[in-house]
Length: 408
Ligand code: MLT
Image (cartoon, rainbow, N blue to C red):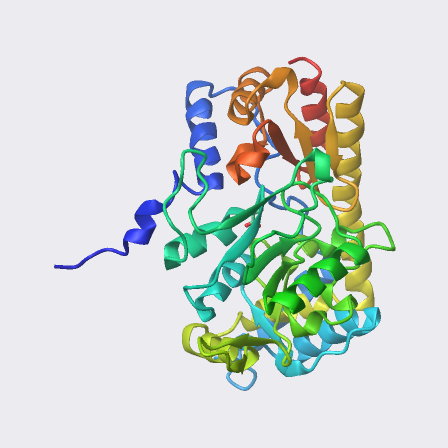
């Protein structure tokens, strides 16, 4: 008899975005003429930067000849990309990294989901509430949590509420926790962490021998020059933090797939009897066993992001999205909505009107304006009464969506 991993049975409902997709398809089937505008899932709409396209075309041509064909590459990524990452994303901000500390992958979603595998099942994890669901669900699947309660919160996980009252920045938990997931700029709230805030978390992790899993997938959207882009800009962070980055939003790679994770060599976790173990070789071992590397073509495209032209072209695309964010914030504020984020992040987090629940507002917006957003409660109970809009839509759609907001 084949038994199932019953931890999967603890999961609540479907994964958030497929669930939204299901509701939108059902509405579309009943209203075939409706022009639905999606400000829901954070998926890019602008074409790839031309220099990236050229680099990928060149890579495809290389694959067409036996003399230049690339088969399996290094599981951790090609040096040409790793070197460009280190120089441009880290050295430029005063952070030194060794090649062996950077692991190129096919997505930050996979990496933030897979990383928990290398940590013991007895770890207590702490997450923000609201939270990117991947961090929680993958720990549920692994059996690191209890069952969900009536609010959808799982036993053994420490939730750190983030609301307007604390500017969506979590306070350190009072109890001891072992693994802390942080995401800045934050998905979904759009909040950012100053150097001082990150320093507090790094110090907390050092005191508690904890590990911070720092998701920086949206760092390219930071506009305030004082906000750190990497947690390693904070002293001591290399001792306690793993950082996740992605080309998905930075360079429009949601359909191309390329990302990377930094695991510093000095980062340690512990055996049950307290012996310190380096985490980097363990992640290396895991990746070599389960992953054959991101495709050569996507890595060639990713490396082009760091060329002078690539930086310029990707910046222009990011600026389009950030103009959208500003249009959303300004329009909604004018209409009397309370909004957050959207300044250093491509997400706008808004309070639902008239005390509506997040899903009730989702339905109202879909029925009356044919606009799709993401219910805040889908990210956790503290997201109830909030709603997320993405700035990744086409500018004309954003403008039209804002006009439609005026009529609901
Ligand atoms: C989101 O909308 O939160 C993101 O697009 C999801 C993701 O990056 O996986």
